[in-house]
Length: 80
Image 1 (spheres, rainbow, N blue to C red):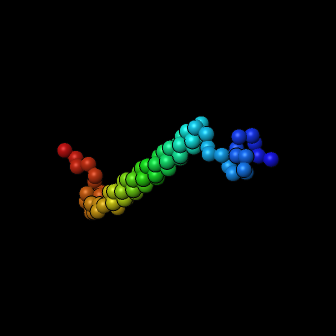
Image 2: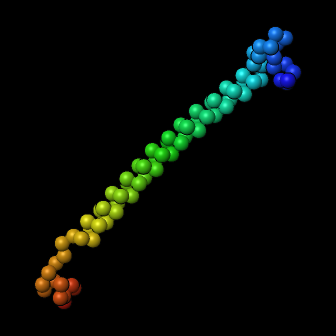
Image 3: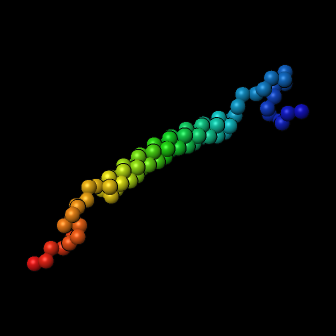
């Protein structure tokens, strides 16, 4: 048999009590906040990864930049 107070005399379920409604609303609010924060974290992580990729690309470009040839390569510091 169901817990006392959950069924009416004719067998139908009783309406939820005020505390049950409040807790349900709190759980829903908390769940919405969790989803929102999760989405914000995902967006922030994607932005950070994009910035990291751009930085790596810039470093790669600088590393592969054209380098001097010939006499400049032999004597990097001119004597004065």
